[in-house]
Length: 59
Image 1: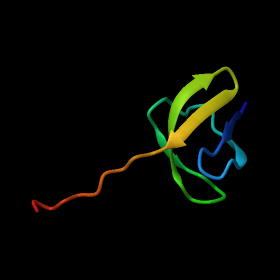
Image 2: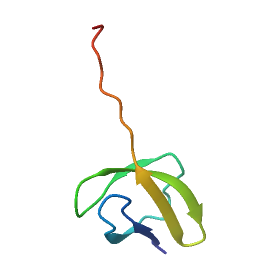
Image 3: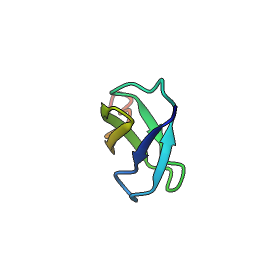
Image 4: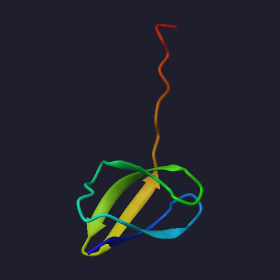
């Protein structure tokens, strides 16, 4: 049974697969923001906008 999720950036509601885990980064299907799963509670998944650091290539 898919879980309900809301984008932390655009508030779009969508479903995610049952096998998602906390810490996983998924894209929002509406605005394409990278979302980190921070809590899974029953059939509800809470997200936050993922902070992905850029590679500095030794600079």
